Amino acid sequence: MPYCREWDEAKEIPASLLKKAYEAQVLPALVGYWPAEYVGSGPEGFDYFHEYIAIDETSRCGSGGVLWGLTGGLSIGLPPVLNFGSKYLKDKCARGCLTGEKRICLAITEPYAGSDVANIRCSAIKDPSGQHYIVNGEKKWITNGVTADFFTVAVRTGGKGMGGISLLLIEKDMAGVETKQMQCSGMWSSGTTFITLSDVKVPVANLIGEENKGFMYIMNNFNHERWALCVQSNRFARVCLEESVKYAMRRKTFGKRLIDHPVIRWKVAEMARMVDATQSMLENVTYQMKLMGKKEAHVKLGGDIALLKVQCSKTMEYCAREASQIFGGNSYIRGGVGEKVERLYREVRGYAIPGGSEEVLLDLGVRQAVKQYERAKM
Image (cartoon, rainbow, N blue to C red; front, side, top):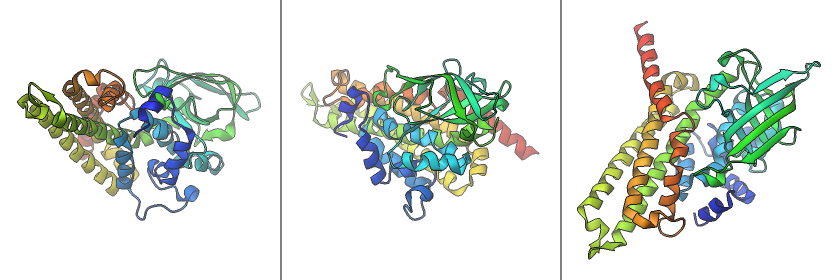
């Protein structure tokens, strides 16, 4: 927590932090299950509540950039390899990424395709020998891309639409891979990256799962990715609430503490009401994830998690705004007593857009409900 601003301004986190996160058993806890084959045994009876606690407690730092710098690439880039990759691919990258020695990222979004994953253009065509794919394209807004050693990349190996997408594990030292850090309004220390892939020669052995099944592999981890974003953003909303209360208890205006003004108490009450209700919904969904198998959860919880993510990002945005009003000018400068609030207000868009924008997810929630209704009718 004391170093978040320093790392934010430097636009990177130190490599040593990743190793400490492994030693604290945080990194292995973030891929949807405990990967004992690569890091040994973990907490007894490990489930989604253990992962919830690891994310929630780490999020107390009040920096999405630091959190994503630590976990953003790992929690979304490694699961496709662990769940669908060959033993060769898992052995190549899993242990190094889980122990903080290496980094991985997920490269799906492109300048012309974000939430619309089925329309990515990055191409992968086999060379005449049939032993390599030649990859060409661009990826944009890729978390941890500038520091990653491995890239789990969505590529087009077939025709149009979702049926022509595959996943490849591309390595940083392959010729033709170029990365450039993007200058975003928030998440500074997470290394948001523009990636250019020019005639990158990738061995066929680096194909994750089967050719043209990549869309299914991407969808398989979306619930987990969105749920993790929910845990983070709801904690950040609570950080805004806690910071506001502490500040309001000591700051005086017009001869009395801020907390003694009815309008400030109203703001605090509204923030608390929204945060507690959202956390209740979040814990309920986490409990369902724990009870259901992955296949059942994919069918039944996709819509609920989509709506939950919108609830969490809107709650974070509301709390960040109200906290800024309570802090006044102290939330308008970097550093000082309003540091967390200023930073989190900048980072709201990082939760309202990535992982599926609010608009896309609201629509998805209703469409999933209609599907459930039609299944029940049948």
